[in-house]
Structures are given as structure tokens and as C-alpha cells.
Length: 385
Image 1 (tube, rainbow, N blue to C red):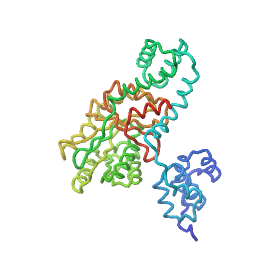
Image 2 (cartoon, rainbow, N blue to C red):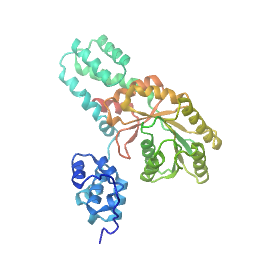
Image 3 (tube, helix red, strand yellow):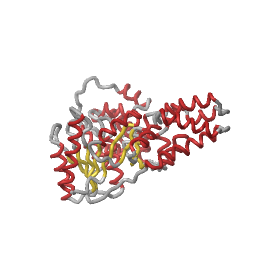
Image 4 (cartoon, rainbow, N blue to C red):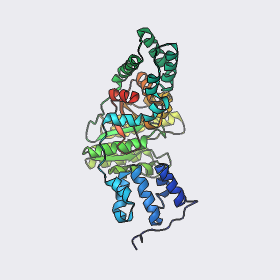
């Protein structure tokens, strides 16, 4: 029998086939994947549903692995065809547009300017309210509207063009080039739990691997349950090597072990995950400093980068997080994640103005290729189009 490899596993209240197909129809691919990843081998129908969810969620590597394991004759032809399609290469502007879609939809940025015919008092009040919702910061919103008043624009399009110009001026000094200096170059990731550190590491690993780099991921966050396991999954997806240990292991020891491997086996880049939350702020900061010391035992010029991962969905609240981590380590750049899940796309403006730390990457989606270098010009254009 073709599906003799299936083994039935006991699960608590598993979703029925009907429920799973309903989730597929609703586009809730992640829910289907989470429900089936431990039980998709139970029967052929579940395997087919799981495969379709993987393809539609753009989990390409897992889908290809399952295709090879099972054979295309045993999977939905439409999903197989979709997987085999040559992916359309998105430009950076198109990726930013996709990532900022929710910002534009919820705030109706484009329609706001189209529906107003005159630059009057009502327009100024609504514009200020819109900018505050965009999360550019109250002070910035008020100041921008005052600037517009002083210009005495008579045309709404002129106001739109002026805003785009000012946003670009504010953000132009925040663009930073990602630096990989030394071999291996050590890149540390810091940030609170839930900010998107794990996914950002996985996506960057994939990008570097595609660029021909030999990459090692080190799981030095041993305090959070399942952190190591999640990072290992991303390492597998990216096709890179991994060093980790059990939950509760000493993070410094794990990092030391990983760096020994990296230096002795000629890796190009080491990506290091760190703890995002410990018992106290002081405990957390000491842990960050300890890990930096471990890196410097191997190479005084490292780390090449210390990237602070900030969640765009919490907007300006991320400023306090940034200040806390910057007080412990020399943060060299910011990775702004989850732009696709928020209306607060403008939060990058106060982050840029207040922190004076360059934005190196932005996360524009859940796919493994959805981490892009920050480009202020294209970012602002995507926000308004």
C-alpha cells in the first residue's frame, strides 16, 4: 500500500477533516499546519491537506521535502502545480507595498487624500489625527501639520507630496548597511520575547546561505521554553547548521561551544539568539554583557553586528525596549518586524528620530524571503501608494 508509512498518533481533540478544509478555505494555513504537523502521516487525506497548507503558506522547503517523501501522484495536483511554478520575483518596492498593505487599508491613506478637495481646517484636523494613528508620534504629527499650514498649500496632492518628502528626509539618516567584518563574522540578536527574533534569524540565515555564505545558528536563549527547538526548525528551513542545548543550560557555555565550532570549521557567519526576558532587568542586562565577553574571547573585533529586533505592532512602546538593550550592549542596528500585521507603519519615524540607530532590515511578511534591507525612499513610496 502506498501509504503504509503512516502511523496513527494519539492527539487530544484533533480537528476533523471538515474543520481542516474549512480553515484551508478561509486562508488560515498556519492553523492547519500547526494542527497537522504532528499527525499528518495518519492517513492520505490529512497528508494532502497538510501539503496544500504548506504550499499556500509559502513554506516551500517543507512542501518540497514532503513531495519527495510521498510522491506527486499522492498529493493534490493543483497544489503540486502551484509549488512547481516559477515564483514571481518581487521588487523591493513591491515587497514593501505588500508589507505595508494593512497600514494603507486600515488608515485609508490613499483615499484620505483623494476624498478631500480643499486644504481647510477640517483637512488639517483629520490629517493630524491620521498621522497620530499612523504612530509617527504626537509631536511629529503636530509639527508636520504646522509646517503644512505655514506652506499655505491650496492643493491636497501638494500636501501629500510634501509629507512624502518630509518622511524621506527624516528616514534618510536611518538607513544602515549590514556589516559582516571578520571570518567568522558574529551577529548577535537582542530583543524581548515575541519581537520576532527567531524568525528574523531564520530569514537572515536563509538570505546569507543563498548568497553563498557558510552559516551557523547558535541558540543562546536557553531560558525560554521551546526557544531552541523553534530556532532549530528555522535552521533546518534555511538549510544551515545549528548549535543548541537543553532548556536551562548555561547560555555562555552554549555560545562558547558554537563559536569553537565556527572558528575551527571555517564558517563565514555566526547568528546568535539571546534571551529576551529574565527575572529582572539587571539579570537580563548582565546576561547580554556576559555573552559579548564570550564572543570577545575568540575575537576582540567581534561581534560584527548587534541587531535589536523590534515589533512594529507595538509602535512607540518599542522605544523603551530599545533603550533598555542599548544600555547593556552596543546596538549597531535595528530589525523592524511584523510590518505586515499592523497599521503602525509610521512607527519607524519616531524610532529613527529618537534612537539614532540605523535600521538594517524590515520584516514584510511570514515567508522565509520576507526580510529586506531598509530603503527609506521605497518604504515611504509604498506607504502612500
